Each structure stands twice: as structure tokens, then as C-alpha cells.
Length: 91
Image (cartoon, rainbow, N blue to C red):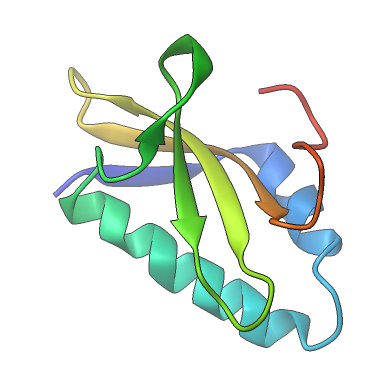
């Protein structure tokens, strides 16, 4: 099982979650848990990073992460709503 580490920026990403934030964040965290057993499940994006699509209600979320096989660690870099154009901080 891979270790999952949330970057400091993910906390500020969660601050942008709309009403009923606790329910949304709980769903996001549950989806991120799948990375412990399947760290390469997300689609590949630039710079060796991957993106996990998280379905939740009408909107859903995307999570940008990097997997380091040498450390068997998933570094979650950012989370955003599918409605947002891009991630708020550069990872």
C-alpha cells in the first residue's frame, strides 16, 4: 500500500469547497484513498504528474498528484472543482 501525503496547498484548495464542504471533502478524501492501492489509476498529465477524476454529485473534482515508486508515496499536489479552469497554485 502506497503512502498518501497531502501538500500544504490542498488545505487552501479545500477552503474553496462550496456549501456542505464537509460532505464534499469527505468524498474527495475517500476517492484519494484509492491511490494507496492503485497509485497509477489517474490519467497522465504534464511533468510526470497524474490527475484523478473524482465524481461527486453534479460537479465533481480533479486531483493533481505525483507518484514516486522509489518511496512508494503519492504526493497530492492540488484539488479543484471540475468547474474551475485550472489549479490555483502551481505545484
